[in-house]
Image (cartoon, rainbow, N blue to C red; front, top):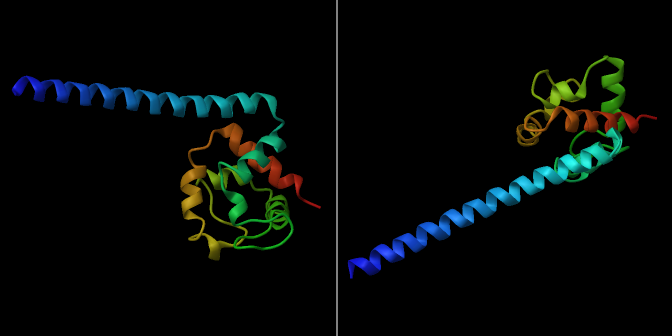
Length: 133
């Protein structure tokens, strides 16, 4: 009976390792896809893809009107007036300057944006500024 138990344990471990390996492989493929897209897309286009997808920014921001957070036009205008960098804020390296009262609401997304590459953050910044009218 102990041989059966050992075989079951080994089979379980082998299956678990295979599953973790597959999950790691899938995550790497997703990251490589984003990198591949980065190379093909202009910064504004990459920013739009991130804004609408990976960044989930679209759930709180609209182009020309306040939803939960300020509009992209308002964000771009204020950052331009203050000669500030949106990417610096999204990295968590500067204070909120558009609507500091909403800062607590944005904490979850800031945790996410802090993991973005500089290229992704620059793309988001380019996309936001492209909405300035």
